[in-house]
Image 1 (cartoon, rainbow, N blue to C red):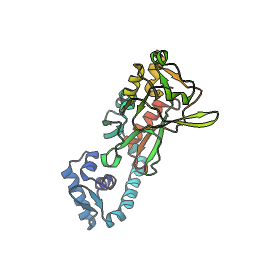
Image 2: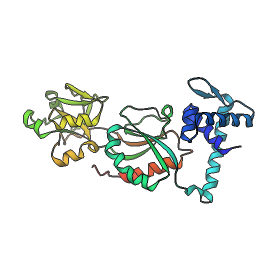
Image 3: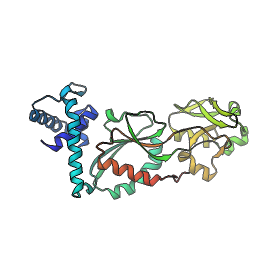
Image 4: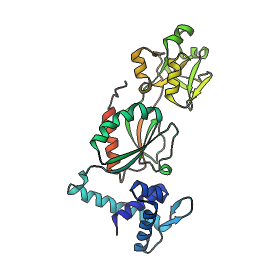
Length: 296
């Protein structure tokens, strides 16, 4: 039985798409389909239901899947036992990441990653929309969020410290709020999807629904509007740390920290057969960002 055929079958089971599964293994759709056919012929059963839009496992395919995974896991363990597992990761690694975080922090750090793993090709999709890993055929995603999806495997890469900030120009013109409740009298700049700012106060948590006439779906756009004196905003320190250093923005309401359990996460569908290229990516960026990231 062909090991590569088994790897492809497992990938098809994850993505529900033969073309995407083949692409991840550097196979054309025609070759990937032929490999699945050969595996079915070898076993003498149909493993996959095929339609024009997607594929799904047959009952026999579902029964066969855990055995295929066990074979691959045993094979990888055998390779590692004789040193083969130390081979440099290669192939194509498909990554989804938030647009702003990806541009500001992932891209600058990729120079060292590519140098360390020259046989690896990176295919990045930078988007502030949450894309489905399986449907999109991604190996890994970077998320700046509070994660509740137990079907995904996660690893925390860095903390995400969020603050309230404004420009000196805005504060000189409109004054500085001294309590969360005072934000009601101010122009607030909102990031799409975040409708409530929750503060920790001596009297317990206080939830504020910020109001203003500007809302955007990109963190850098909201930050830039704040720098331009257009209002007060909540932002991650990874997005504003340089502007704070330059004095273009200042933190306000520091005595009322925001309540948030968000972090920078690496997210991937399964850890049972974690590909070397995925592990290399996660380990590299976990080390880059560290326990206390450079953005504070």
